[in-house]
Amino acid sequence: MRNSNRQWILKKRPVGDIKQGDLELVEQPIPVPGPGQFLIRTLYLSLDPTNRIWMSDMEQYMPPVQIGDVMRGGTLGVIEQSNNPDYKPGEIVNGIAGWQEYSVAGGAQKMAKGPAPLPAYMSVLGMTGATAYFGLLDLGKPQPGETVVVSAAAGAVGSIVGQIAKLKGCRVVGIAGSDEKCRHLVKDFGFDACINYKKENIRAALKRECPNGIDVDFENAGGDILDAILEQINMKARIVLCGMISGYNDKQPRPGPSLTNILMKRARIEGFIIIDYFPRLGEFLAEMSKWVAEGKIKYDTTVVKGIENSLSALNMLFTGGNTGKLLVQVSEE
Image (cartoon, rainbow, N blue to C red):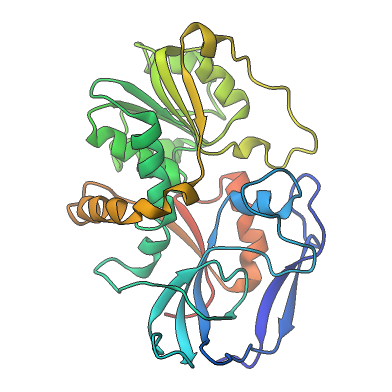
């Protein structure tokens, strides 16, 4: 066990891209669990686009992280010491312990060790998979034969969305940022087509790959990509607004997309946050575990070692440096 607890503290709210100095890595004593509490050693830290939202003081679904506080983040950890008879050393728990090596809690969600490796429970069998599952099926309502477009398709959520849409009998077109990512999505994950938005004219490519128009858009990118998609939606299309990562580092709000087609095509655009679906996670786990075990859903993880690399790793989300779920391995399993 280490003799100190390294933590990333929010020093100032980022302006534009996240920079060194916006957060600071500090060392504190390892916390001591009080009566009814237990000490958790963080194994994995989840890095997500929402981290950038939490750093800002914009309108959001949780209070922003306060200056001087430990950066918020989803975690998977192991109990090291316990003063709580319901939690035993060696048990695995998940929660939002933040960007630090150790934390103390009085309760946590226990996680039974299953056949899948632990990182799967931070990706396809965790909040990432649940976001894809509920967002597509509850809001997108894909029907056999429909065309589903997924932006940021090689990312943690997008790559799973596309595979679920294929299971539901849809034509699936991904949008990603490199030829290699596009090749991977088509060859390994079964997408029908993938557009490299950095190389192709997105409007022309969408016309080519979606000859029958677009019925469902699972939107992770926003910006120019969403603009192009909205021009080609079908009657009664559903736009599932999961994220708009292209604008998270903007210094000023961008001009909005043209919503004329939402009106003319009687489409529906709906945002959602996965915390609304927590009461239904059991339903998701039962279905997704089966799909993963049968090899019907595959997943990627990009794992960066060492909590000291968390800040530089986070920027991979905005430069396209990761494929699938981005995790920091904070300590050895």
